[in-house]
View 1 (cartoon, chains in turn purple, brown, cyan, red):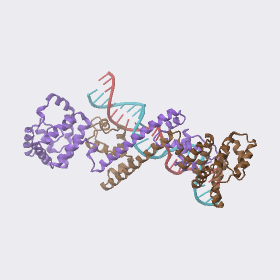
View 2 (cartoon, protein in one colour):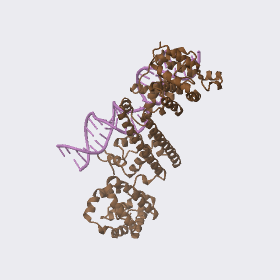
View 3 (cartoon, chains in turn yellow, red, blue, cyan):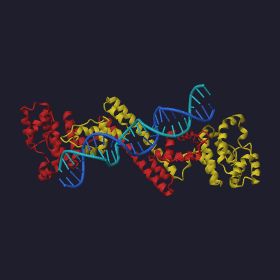
Length: 255
Length: 255
DNA sequence: TTGCTCCTCACGTCACGTGAGGTGGC
DNA sequence: TTGCTCCTCACGTCACGTGAGGTGGC
């Protein structure tokens, strides 16, 4: 016969856990000895290991209580279900390992943006765009993805084909340099003109009305986001009334 | 700018969780709009995803709070540690899958007894011992393993070599048949004589004092366990004063 | 006698869940 | 006007952990 401490130690749980299982009605209260101590037989070891095996597998105590007294068929069905849940949990944990690895790798844009957009940001870095501007572009994309995920494929397409145009790349770099200019700087007007003159390579292929309607929400979102832009860019935006977002992720425009 | 619902939905958490992170100081409280609603920018999305990635990986919120403001080196050290914990958790879950599979497989003695003892029990079943007697033997072993694990290898050895002796096997089966006899049945005295006459094959090789001292605790344990035996076996025990446990797991005796 | 185990309350913990009661936006 | 989202308390949940205060066994 075992004391509660011997039972608990052998099964690898605390005495508090054993008492908790008594309280919840999972494990039968054993007889007491002369001094009121609980005395356990071998069956209690078997019962406790069963309880622990299920509990360690993630089964809630209330469910374990029901399963203990369930017919064999219901029990084995439940076990199959628990096994499926464990498999899923293992897959999830493997996924979490990949995600914290992304976290460690420099902060990991992969965590909060789809791969195509990460590729665009890397391309910007590749042509020499400053990290500050890349961050502004990144933040714009994050908001677009969060609020209007349905426009993302189209916008990515436009941005990608724009990036293939050397003129666009030059304009983007020019906006990048203008980041800290005085809003009264006369060169901003020139830059605004150049932006207006640049034509998106893909823009001729699309039907205007669809695009306008589809982007309405996203454009208004970008406009509110523009509040956090540097002064020079806000001025640039005022100088280009057709283009409310000079440095944004919005399709076909330099930033 | 995002409302709390939009932010939460995009990151895949509840609004309650976001407010909880504000309360715990993990996520900065953003500015409010005219009607007192929280308004989030892209950085909040980034911060929340970071928090969630760590939390999903099992890092306590208090630790996440410290890590967010930690230098990069401490951060990556912590990530490595978290990754190790995840690896361990995955191994543990794989182990739990194996254990619930044992549970489903007929209740699984493998769960609460070492393999060599399971083999002994299966051998008993193989020679035709009743399931009731096997259960008594099983329960005896469970108590021995729990209370005196150090004697187990020796007792297993003795029991295994005894089982190789045809005379022992016949005696064991005889005790099995005697399970429900009347305690006054005269055949019990004959059986007790036969038990006394049987000599363990390995007993001549051992030094008596060592054995006696080493088994003292276990023997007294078996004696208390004997209280749960059927009446005929208790009588058998009285008739064999040298052998207090006729049907027990104790080395060298028939059961 | 000392240290260890056992006993029974009963409050604490962790990361939120879940109404309760009320207001703002479309 | 209706339904949905937002707001702030504040108590509830799950599986125990952790003393508090006291007694029994070696």
